Amino acid sequence: MKIIDKCNQILNELYKFSSEVLYLGDNILDSRLENLEQKIGLKLPQDFKYILKKHNGITLAGTEIYGLSENFRGNSLDEIYNFEHREVENPMPIFFFPFSPDGQGNHYCLDLSKLNENICPIVFWQWDFEYENIEEVEVCNTNFAEWIGEVMIDWTLQNYNYDGTEKL
Image 1 (cartoon, one colour):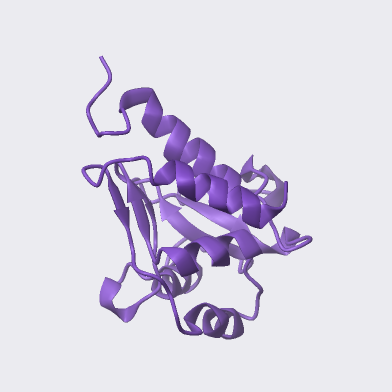
Image 2: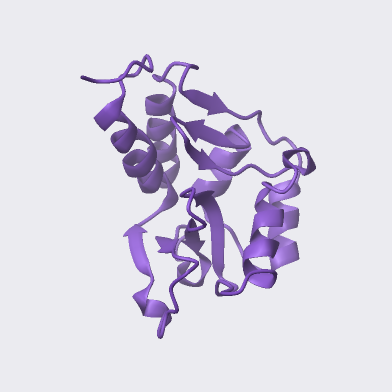
């Protein structure tokens, strides 16, 4: 299955959720994602850009994907990237692109060093762990669309119905 088809399948699954538990940001109609790529000197994967252009920020039952806008006041992708690489005690490698927090200071990241055929794996960066070797960082998913399917959709459906009611 082509990655854009997978993205559309994932988005259609997200759209089944009630607005009680799902927030979908507006479309990105300008070139801010491409400008961000130029600023960081790295290309973003196709599935990530496709979904972010459709929805600039997504939250499902507390799991968040950052958006890209000065209106997000410190929680914009560019600001988080800068902070996690330049202002923390244990900075991420420059090719890790944080896009989703776990609420404990850790982040799910795109591993842009492994960008291949316009997709890259997702890793889980623990801020308080001293990695001896970058290969110790946990690889969670093979791509961004797969991550949304597992972490956002499947994990949410373990506890909630599409309408936002808790499962018993």
